[in-house]
Amino acid sequence: MLLTSIVIVSSFAAADVMAPPDIIHNPGEEYSAATRAFQGIPSMERSPGGRLWATWYGGVGGGEDETNYVILVTSGDDGASWSEEVLVVDPGVESLTRAFDPNIWLDPTGRLWLFWAQAIGHDGSRGGVWAITTDDPDNADAHWSEPRRLTDGVMMCKPTVLSTGEWMMPASAWRQAEGFTADNSARVVVSTDDGETWTIRGACHVPADDRSYDEHIIVERDDKSLWLLARTKYGIGESVSEDRGHTWPELTPSGIEHPSARFFARRLQSGNLLLVKHGPIGERTKRSHLTAFISEDDGETWPHSLLLDEREGVSYPDGVQSSDGVIYIIYDYDRRGARKILMATFTEEDVIAGECVSDAARLRVLVNQAG
Image (cartoon, rainbow, N blue to C red; front, side, top):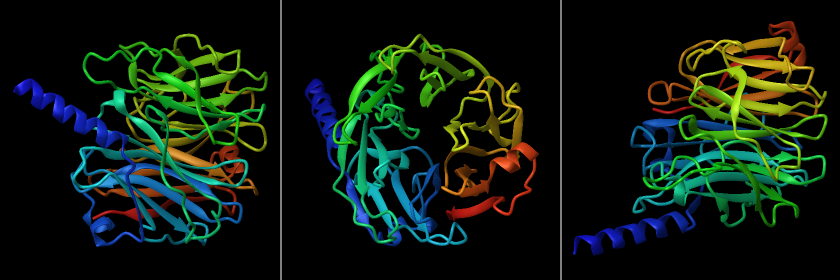
């Protein structure tokens, strides 16, 4: 009888994970910031017309649990003010499944994607990456598609558009249920048809003793090799693929010091690389001193830096660069206490100067505060 009960519960749990969540437009008071005991892990994007979109996840349970849902807000005045919740992704109060780790991304066709993960607790073995899209990202009342599941795993960082025109999404097998092997956990999932289909192309093995959610990101280097950077227990690991992502050497330390936490890397319009992480390049800090770095030699050195927020408890940067060169970075602060989502804007000029010298520079801009 006990065995039968376990099988039934497991079947229901699997069904919860695979079921499309509720996409709630104009959510009510039950999803307001005042009700959230926890929020963080944000992402940001900018529409062609300059509208900002921000997403993160939260819940009433005070942490990463079955109450988690994804929040979407928007700004039509370059972040001076932000809307209330315009959309919520929620698997439902009766479900064991949580919605978490969202990311928002504008693809080369001008379509806006809202990605998120669905899983039960921290069981990545049945996790999946889901998405909705809109073709009208300049509109605060944009119409969104029905949700669809794209691939197994958990996605944390934005896709990268390769020089071949392919879209490469990082998706991780992540932390697994007991007895499930997560070898080759840092996967790359590719679309060659503008996001209609996604196929696993290859994966990097992150040694089990080092693995810490992966949260990897892909940069295409000037020589067309692909540089994978991943979160580990020791900080940031790296692997380089010479065959467009089909094969990857085992992850090894990158030499960039960091706590076990998410970071952000992106190619800028100038051709330089941007890295946003905690503390100096060669020093491991706590989740504090969130700093933007510029590399002019494809990641070999990072001589330029701008401190964005020195407080302990800042984490999980994501961002975008506008067509006029302004860099937007979003991050969280004190997920269970202050529960703030914050934004910084700056230019390469500011990073190279090591201080805010441009008119575009703004630090600690409030996007949302719970409680």
